[in-house]
Amino acid sequence: MNAFILIGATATGKTAVCQAIAEQTGAAILSTDALLVYKGMDIGTAKPARDEQRRVRYLGIDLFTPAENSNAALWRNAIRRQLADAPVAQSLIVTGGTGLYLRALLEPFDAPPPDPESRARWQTVFDTRGLSALQDALRQRLAPDAFAAIPDPKNPRRLLRLLERLDAGETLDPKKSVAPAPVVIGLSMSRELLHQRIAQRVRAMIDNGLLDEVRALRETFSTWSDTARAAIGYAEIADHLDGLLSLDDAIERIIIRTRQLAKRQLTWFQNQLRPVWLDTTPAEPLADLAQRVRAAWQQHGPARLHVDP
RNA sequence: GGCGAGGUAGCUCAGUUGGUAGAGCAGCGGACUGAAAAUUCGCGUGUCGUCGGUUCGAUCCCGACCCUUGCCA
Image 1 (cartoon, rainbow, N blue to C red):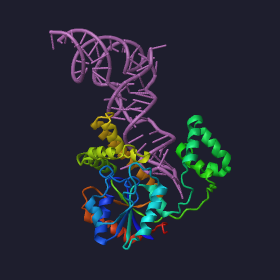
Image 2: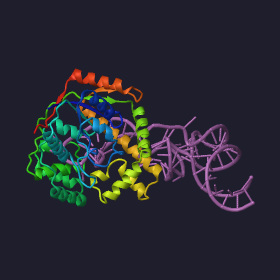
Image 3: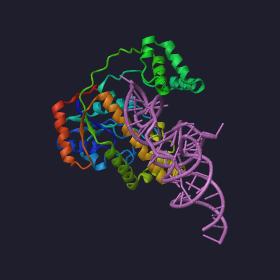
């Protein structure tokens, strides 16, 4: 199945542009976002509003409750189920800020799923004997060239995952071929403007009732999953409600974490996807930007998704 | 006004027995196939308040001044 893709850092205005185009064309929107999956986490995730969701069909939103853990595998399975249950009749727009989730749609995604037992076992090894114990374990199990090819070899979480995959019987082949990345369109904005916009958006979230949203969610769900609890905005407001952080400090902290997220997103998109960037500013009229995005999609064509059932 | 404490990186601070300085945070750059709004690697960006004095050499010692802050008036 084919789709038009628009990526970009948080707060660059992807959602509004895609919403506008979808309303013009009748397209559905598939969100590749790790936190939009949580029901009730609306204001802090900048989720499309109710009436926007009434006008456009969204996939990938409101899949889990904040009590449930989420991950790329669960997300991908949910997307496939949604597409199987109600095939997209019109064209499909894919947009979101989570690069890994987009990759899960574009490339074969068939490594063994997470195994809590194996993960916990290696976590204990790491906690008691440190990073070098994980590296040693991998050195023993991998061919020298495969070991040398491990990316990010000082990152315990990634080494843990590799060991988990080996435990599940996968043979890691460093030469494993991946599908060539399609041309994707990206929305960019000068760093200065982006930082301004992030600060404005965070303050707007507070004004729009983020505290009440977090309060209400905490009443409904007494315990949150690790993935939901770590969400930017929700972690800080929860700390504020618990008296650990003043509101001003919480807001500042949310702004900083959002900036850092945007930075990581830009690095990932730029170096993993080499997108065709369309530079914009908050002052550009939405209709103009929508027109430019549509023109870019026409010029470069749709991308093929690897999610057919 | 008097006494005390302090002025060092964007912020909070450490330090230099006198040889122009370094941590955390922020920032910048990188990694990345099931935690990804996660995790992780690298990089110091500086009129050491100002003006004089002593000295081969002052951010450091001395003096004056300016500013901040605490206590007492």
